[in-house]
Every structure is written in C-alpha cells, then in structure tokens.
Length: 350
Image (tube, rainbow, N blue to C red; front, side, top):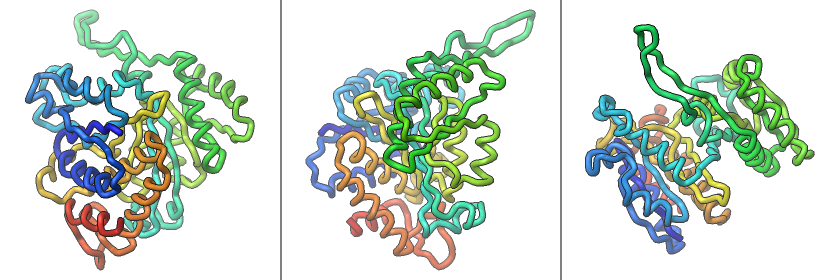
C-alpha cells in the first residue's frame, strides 16, 4: 500500500508528520515516500507540481497532503504559484469528487460561534465537484478591450461531469440519512440549470434517496440558520469551495475538518480543509487533528479498512474528551497543547 506524502508549505510539514506517526502506529505496512508540492516545489524546481512528484503521485495508491501557499509566492507568475500545484495534481489524477464532512464533536460545542442548540449534533457531508467549473473553464485570462483590462473566466459543465458527481453524492447518502440537497444558481446561470436537470435525471437511479434543491445564496444562509436540516449537499467547484469553508466554521475550527478528493476507483488525495497558516508555521502550535482525520478517511475510502478508520476517529474523540486542545479550539479549563503533544495524545489513545 503506497502513500505519497506531500508536506507542502507553512504548517504542512508539522501536521503531516503527526498523521504519518498515526499511520505507522497502526502497523499496516504502508510504504510512504515524500515529495514536493506547492511553494516549496517552486523554490526547489521552479514548478509547483514537478515531474518527480507527478511520477510518485501517479504510482501511489493514495496521497497525503499538508497544505500549500504563502505570501512569499503571491507575486509569482500565475503558473509558478503554489495553488497551481494543487489544481495540477487534482487534474492529473482525475480527482473529481471532494468529500468534506462537517462534524461537530460534543466536546467542542462551545467553540462554535453559533448557539450550541443550533449546531449540537451537526453531521453534514459536502460533496464538491473538483475538476470542472469556473476554475478550469476556457476561455480564461486578462485581456484588453476598448482600452481597458477585462478579466474572463468561463463556467462550464458537461452532462457526464454532473452525472458522475451526483452519483457519488447519492451513494454517500445511502450510507447516511438518505437525503441529498443539490445546490445551484439555476435562476441566473444556464450552466447550473443543466446541473439541476441532470441531477434530477440521475436521482431516478436512487429511488430510496430523497432529493431537494436549493439556490446557493439561500444555501449559504440556511447553513448558518439551520445547518442540521442537511445530510449530504452536492454542488459544483466554485459554490462547493465557499460552502464547505462556511460549514467548517460551524464546527468551531477549520482545524478539525478533513477532506478526501477521489477518482473513479477511490484513489484519493487526503488533506485538511484548512490552509498553510503561514502566521503560525514553525511554532509547533498548529492543530494536526484535521490531517489525522484525513488519514482516517484514507483508510476508509482508498484502503477500505473501516475498522482502522474508526480506531483513528475514536482516538481523536477520546483525546478531546480528555480535554486536550490546541490554541484554535482552546477554552478555559482545558489542557492547552502544541502540535506534537496533540499527536502524542492521539498515539496514546490508539
């Protein structure tokens, strides 16, 4: 079982190190090898997704990623920005389905900015299409028209792309509460009118799953007003990017949320939902739990080892119940710890 480990930038190396320790503790005989992605790859090779990383990622069964990006690369040419490496590996590996669970652990109910009764028991899965939409559509760029600069990006989805991601959402809902809410903007965008039409057609393959629809602006509002109405949400790349970050903050900290990006055969890239947090990089205070929980998703989806996935998730629950907290989720009376200490606590719980 080969895992390509991409520590990346900022806090990436610190948090992936703890997830790697957890995977090694499980003694499942993983073969792990590190490579460069993002800003560190630009500095070393001039390419955010270098050829050596491409070969390793393609040969691996799964990829574990920390985070990419940082202000020192913001003024680079667009093709040499860290985020291009992330988009590149998603496209290269055909990782079209992004799964982001937003789960509120009971111990962290007070960490949310919403009232505990609004978020207590929250368990949402957001399924985001990852390789299409405005992020990849052509034409794109900045050009001059009538003497002024004009920026152009194109939102585009094919019927097959929509059907593929809809099936992922319906299949996931079958294992949960059998409800899918499809999010679009069909009242304004023809592209998302097609999205709604195809999702309705695909729903016929899953008669046991209840389908509803919501416009994206209303969905953003409902996530704050009444988030527990949702089970599985499915949407396009742009809307999913925004809504999944919004949902993450319902749980109190984006530092708690894992994610999985899968191809059609469940080969996946697993990463925390948060960014590289350059302001705390190197200080040993970052929360590694989202990365550790991403490793649990890897065990579940790519390696089909539900027992090991639950072992890791139960260890995280135990650590939280014992009162261990990194700074992002700390509250008075708890045990404030750093990155490695939190990793130590998870290993002890395992």
